[in-house]
Length: 198
Image: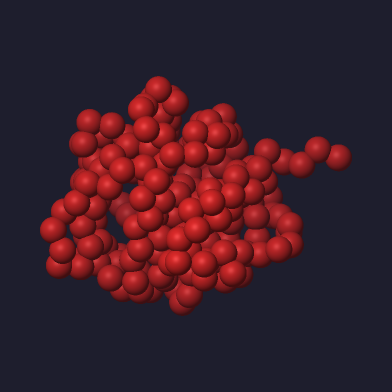
């Protein structure tokens, strides 16, 4: 029996994480489930997905096979947003979305971690926010500016491991290209959404 295509995304994501041999990622890999329990997830689209068509042509992709697989299978995933107007602008909402592929609501079941994709359109500022879960971002396409805690903004290229501690405020700002990043959450608050700073 052929496996659903979305399971390949979770497998490719794990390969991408494991290949980095990064110390902060070790705990996430330790919590990655060894089972293959799956759930049916209804597909849902968002306006930001039109930027996916541009990703395969961008220079400097990290893990192009994962990017290509996501572009091919994005229509099978449940894309969501954590915010709504008036907390954020309509322009931001049109250029923002995420989809979990592993975790408490994704197509692959995991109890201790969550993994998925964040997509931001060009010239988009994701305001300072925080959440209880420890987080790692792995940009796959698009160099963007990232800011965490009280540190200055820094451009981070695809392939960089970006680690946020629980409740550490952080923000992102894209340039001329869309940003696609793999995210991982672990620890407390996996079911809780991020909240914007005042």
